[in-house]
Length: 376
Image 1: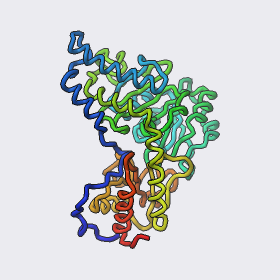
Image 2: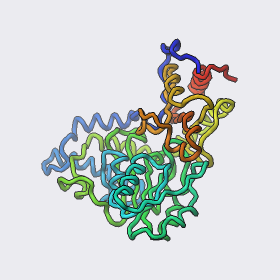
Image 3: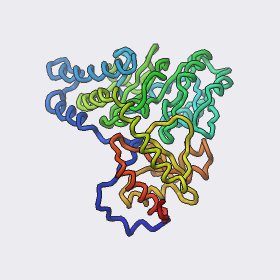
Image 4: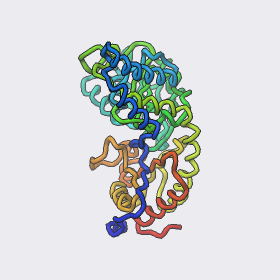
């Protein structure tokens, strides 16, 4: 790889192509939070006027989420984000079926359940990264009543869409309940596939909202609380809800309905980049994918080193899940799909909803420069 240190002074603003890690807050989100900080900053649990104003903001968010997913507002639990929502959904599961494709907040929880003697079945991972619904049939025998299937709507590293509706149908037929991690899907895809899910997790910062707030939506029996404390969130998640974060989350949810159409238009840019890098990289993940995500493996190049070189050239991408950053191990998702060698050279590019052709040209040139090659 070319020594990128000589190019460390980049005149233009960096290209942020790591939208799967987090998204920049939308101006409407920032404006909503600024107004809430001025006028509705109270404790939503307080019964006086200041508290009631704050409570109204929180309730409006709950209603917006319930409307988006077709649930009852009463069955929306606000959390600190997707990780807490996934843990809240599954921590009490007497048995679990999942896969190594899941977010670390599900995989680590599954491993913890397994270490405590609860049965956990790991679905086989195809090279495509798309789970086969029929593989679920042989995984459910002998599981205790009340066991769960945990599946992502969309993979956080490859952007591959999972057949959630088919998996849900088979899981329900086998007596399992279904939790869907929709953190990467919400605001980017239609939500039809999630109609049968029993629990759904979302996070605001993945759809241009603020960090530190998410939600678990459920149908049927509520989850068992992870924390002990007050009666906030019906006692399912004690602790003071921040109305400022709630106002920002609501603004992001209001944009989410038009999101699929906005994101659909990004596919042409993602495809252009993949074609441009086709002579030096292989795409990881097959079938339907999110329109802005490309996971690429480069031969004889470590993904983390390429990420560092691109950063010096003003292009910001990642070599795996942001939740696993700083670890020496390659992507667990790509390893499960295609092996460790392929994972070592993997880089994830996740474009923004306003990406331009000119920015793609800059990114393409930076890739070839970092690799010490002349672009075609």
